[in-house]
Length: 355
Length: 167
Image (cartoon, rainbow over all chains, first blue to last red; front, side, top):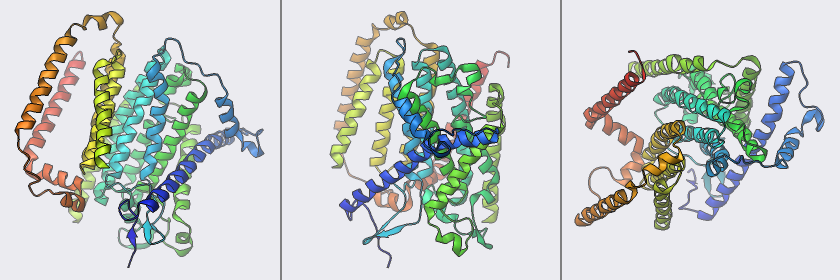
């Protein structure tokens, strides 16, 4: 008999304790990943441009994130006189919190037995998991818009307006590309989506898992591109295009508030990578159903996939020039959205035919 | 426990609703409204309707309010503009108080009969809230659903016509 699932009703003390441990571990891992993503990005781009990147602090610059953190911490905090105070102070928090809060539904392993109960390796399993992520991804735009508006400077305002137009446009295509996935999975719970992807590929090939990237390659491409646009990464970093807008919505920010924007960017990158890994690349499951691979614990696979996706994002940044703004909007509305809609229609048709 | 939580969230909802009408800056009012939407989403979760909560945040807080803030930012009302509309506050507060009493009166007049119908808490938990809504929308309420979508389409076309100088 499998033990009962641990919940608030059958053992409150254990539940709260384990929940706190999970929260702490996930938060620490995400924050450390954020810190080292900055180092890694500078290193990767440096080597791609035949430079060395940070070398001085620690071995190959390994202490660089901490040096940067300490530097930003001791910088003078400047709030412009003409800024609108409350939104100006709230904006950096409003951009970081939605990014961090979405990690809560990403599963990072199978259920494990603790004492007499089963504990899922996930902070919480919502049965509307995907919608939850979409809802909070849509809230990230507030931080940028408010930061741009409250700074009361023309570069910030232009950056904020660009950001909101861009994020609203690409959110639609991102949402539609995910719809195709849960038309196949028939569930919105990320845990069940991962479980479904562990089955055999199309029910025939026994050692390759049924990852949705094989059945939905177009949706995967659309998701990655639109997600990049939504988190304002190169080649879609129009809101902070430094050659024309100084640095966009965060021009007027200094010290830790600027650091929060920076952290939010990398936290968003981690969330998007984790989401792409969970929805399309099988989440924490091993890439091949052979004993050597399945022996490795789930979170290692998930982190490997997340870091791989992040490496690809850095690679993109080193490779592509910035897209022009009108091209960006045209791409979003006239290419991405119709493609995503067509993908939904085709998926629906195939699902009906196969039934 | 649940009732304490309810009152806590309700307090936040009412206070942020009050901020919506009292804030000097329209953007701060809009932020208050977003906060109210959040509290409503929490109520939906407490009523075992997580799908409604997600849609509430996604549509109202994530899309509609962003557009409203966008518009407010672009218009950026000046000090003189704001002063001009102060005389309406007294009358509108009296009107809204009257509406409030009216609503309370009508609610009190009704009789609470208890939960009825097929959709019980047990069914929502076993069958899934999203599935139930989906089934209802695409079978029983298909016509209203389609009419609503046509209405939205008309609004989109209208917006394009208004925005474009030459059609």
